[in-house]
Image (tube, rainbow, N blue to C red; front, side):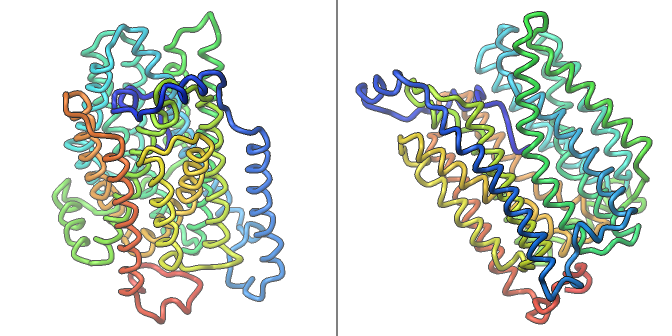
Length: 480
């Protein structure tokens, strides 16, 4: 997911920045929570961007070539809402599990090393088992795989109610497998069903940017719900996990009764989808897109590991909950901007602007990586990063819909995700050992991933036929 616990034990175990004693003493006198007008500004900015979309498109001579919300058919609107309902329920359940999980494990008496080991177990299962589970979903069926996701997620929720370390370990295995399915099967089901029903391919962009925008809302909501539950004296730290299990059950029911089954690769079990995926990687454009996606996902994961220790280095106090809401608002603003690029009125081909977005995202992490201590500047850098995330997320999804065939969609997404799990597993293992990575080293890995991604997208743009840029109604991979 795009969010995690603001006080991750991995974050707190990584090497801290250093400050002078005078600066520490000065910062301890006041808790920094950011200007209140910033949150109002973000809401106003999102509304302005979205409203300007409608106004400008109404005056655009290209209106007949640009999909607009007002031109959605009832059938597409129903499909759109059904998918987003499932996606947001799954995201909310995951978000509830991520918030305050450290407090839950501390109430069980677990040490930081034990918590980090559980995280490593989850990422290890995602890498070594979840990758192949995601690949097999193309032949198993995306609806069946989504149901399996809900079952694994529910088992993970139940396991968190136990203080037994072995049970928690099994729970993290289930959650690691569920995470692999989350990042592959939902998009694979949606894009395949979208094509099977016969909706226009350019309408996919409307779904992609709404996924990013709504994820910001879910991120804020999951934190707020978890905080309310934790403040109730009659409830324990287990309450968010219980609610997450209930939300997962609602997600399961919606999938069972609302979704149709679609299958990518018929027959072949695991071997046929895997061979299809390896064959697809021979296309240089898909391989470059995979490297970009891996670098982008890794930068997000690294950010959530390090943002809190960067802000609270050497005893500084900040309102992480309020700053977290600010970051989610920034992502929503970015997704609103992406809507203007992808769906009108500007209609910019993703290969043109995504390299600049990824470059700015990488540049925004340079100051945090090299020990800059001014909190307002750090929050500004983090906000810029999340605006870029909001733009890049739906834009990369649109590129995947152009270059990757639907019969191997879950396979390719699983292969793209595997390097991210491997690097995170390495960081976690090093975090438990005595040879921890420096914060600057981990941030540098994220920056390198983003800069490399920018170069990869530029290369994809050079490989794409020039004539395809003349067509605003982007086409399927078979046409490019």
